[in-house]
Structures are given as C-alpha cells and as structure tokens.
View 1: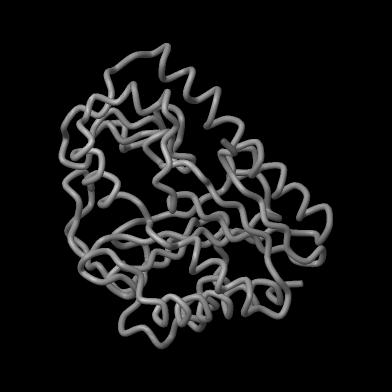
View 2 (view 1 turned 120 degrees about the vertical axis):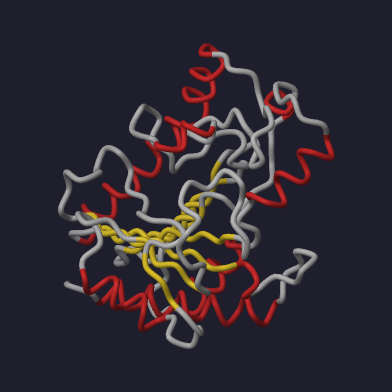
Length: 265
C-alpha cells in the first residue's frame, strides 16, 4: 500500500497542492490496534475526513495555465496526522488529537496510550511523509527559486466536539495563514480567487498553514496558505459529492494556483 501519491506538475511551477486529509484508508495492522467498533469508526471517518478535497485539487490542476505539483496523503489521518506537530508544541495533544490520535472527535478512546506503538507509527508513516514533503519543497526551490504550498482542506458546518476554538464564525471559506510564510500578496490572491463565495474568513475556525518542519520558520523561500472549504459548499447532507460545485471550487482554486505561480517572481 502506497501511503502517498506525488503527481508531478510542470517543471517551472513552484506551486504544491497539498491534500493531507482526503483518504479513509486504514491499513489492516493499524485497524486492529483501534479500540472502536466498525460503526464508530465509520462515524469518525465521516466527521473528520476532508472528503473529495483530492477531487477539487485535481479539478484545480486541470484548470491552470501551468500545472502545479500535488502531494496527496493516501492514508486516513487516523493513521497519523501529517500536519500536527509530533511533539509538545501541538495544542491538540490536550484532547488526544496530536500527530497520533488517541481519542475520537467526541472524546471516546480511539487507541490505547502506548509510547512504543506511537513511536512505531511516527517512524513508519509520519517521518517518511514529512521527508517526502520536505524533499518536494527543496526540489521546487532548486528548480524555481521558491516553493508555494497551498494546503487544501474542508470542515463541517457545525463544530466537532474536539475543537478548541469554537466561538468564531464558520465561513464558506477559511484562509489559514502563518506570519512567517504567508505574505500579504498570497492572502490577497486567495481572497481574489475565491471571490464568488458568500463569505471568507481568516484563521477561523482553523488557523495556520502547513510547512514541513525542516523549512518551518527558517526558510524565507517557502510560502504557504491554507484553504479550508466548508463542506456544505460541495457535499449533500448525506455526504455525496455535488460534481458541478466541486468543479467550480476547483476552478477557483486553480485561479489561486495561477496567481501563486505568478506572484513575486
């Protein structure tokens, strides 16, 4: 089982579409370590999978003038979450939702606390994934002089019980930024690309954006912005994909890719 897929873009493109949470796949040896029932697992996956964000990313890539690179996580975030800090910096450790989840969205036990098992998951899945992303970023810098990560996510209309910051609005689009890696031109480009949406927020309900730790806050040639689409923009109440909505969102995301490709050359 391949834990990730790299789809090569144009050699001149600095843009990386990162799709970390679209998969529901859990290897058998990991499933056997989870304490939840099949029904509980299905409900958990329904709630936390960024369903069809990989499809939206593909629509985006096809709509661009210069195709971006895509790195897609092909395993569920219940295996490991590649975007969490793997150490005490991660605030969601407090609710069992760090790099290796130990609790479900509603606080039930997902897997038993076991330092050896956690280390094995990190060594098998987390660190190789981080290295692949870091290598891709390094490659894009070498080829183009910079790397621009567009981190593609979605979130439910209503907050999940594990969320730590639930007081803010939940707009149709949340733009996540980092003070070191998200320049104003990139934030402005995201607003402009998604202008047809009815409301756009910044760092609400989720904040920040992904940069591999080897480059995090040390590499001025790495830019990053997070795109969080509220799921009712492209899914039915039953979680089914609305194809035309996904295509439209993909076209908007493609406009952001094109702007990121042009930006600050």
